[in-house]
Amino acid sequence: MTDMTPQRWQFTNNYSRDVFGRQDPHLANLMNDGVAKGLPDIAVSADVGRLLYILTSTTRAKLAIEVGTLGGYSGIWIARALSPQGKLITIEPEKLHADFALIQFQKAGVADRVDLRRAPGLQVLPQLARELPPKSVDVIFLDAIKTEYPAYWKIVRPLIAVGGLIIADNVYGSGDWWIDDLDNPSRQAADQFNRLVANDADFEAVAVPLREGVLIGRRMR
Ligand SMILES: C[S@@+](CC[C@H](N)C(=O)[O-])C[C@H]1O[C@@H](n2cnc3c(N)ncnc32)[C@H](O)[C@@H]1O
Image 1 (cartoon, rainbow, N blue to C red):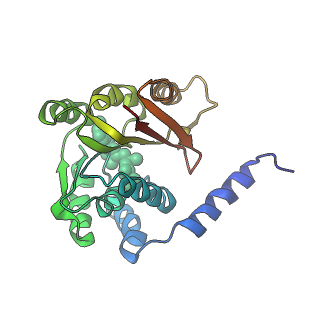
Image 2 (cartoon, rainbow, N blue to C red):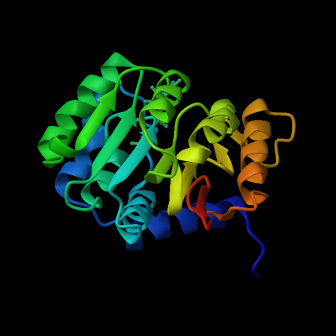
Image 3 (cartoon, protein in one colour):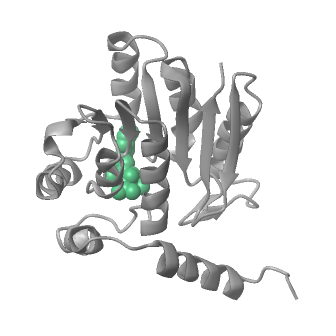
């Protein structure tokens, strides 16, 4: 009776978005507008957006970093949850995506708290690691190249504040792989990343099976 089937999984996802996916008209239309301008339809869902909002506000975040801006959808959820004077640094190398996202940040009224860096994550993150003091970042959200997650982790780990969070999307799967596809390189990288965070003595972590899996790790010391 309680066995998971593809139909039940799909129903559960749709149910979650229906019940927990309330959003304003701008956010509801953002990715439709983005797709019309040529962006891929790969933003987080509204229930994952709400999870980002809750987690960011729970840490009373003053500084957040996002790797993978796309059209600004998840960034707006994060930016709205920052403390007063808080800042989101979001990283996006694709001009089409970054240009579109900047317009969306303006429309959402959060542009003054968003710093968009137009370069690949593995270029920007080492710069940030030099610019920012250790343990000074409250929230880091990874949502870019899945095979690079272990490398992102190595760079951002020292930046995460005590009580701060590492959050990562797609830790159970993505469009073309799932966590039971043992030979898939993205799956292998996600597995490596999950285990790095899960086995880190300074962090407590779990992944919630919302949409394609969201890892949440908190630095305890
Ligand atoms: C899954 S989308 C991000 C979705 C976004 N976080 C949201 O939910 O609204 C991944 C984004 O990462 C960007 N990207 C691609 N290569 C990247 C890299 N090397 N570093 C950072 N971002 C990259 C892509 O252009 C794309 O916009």
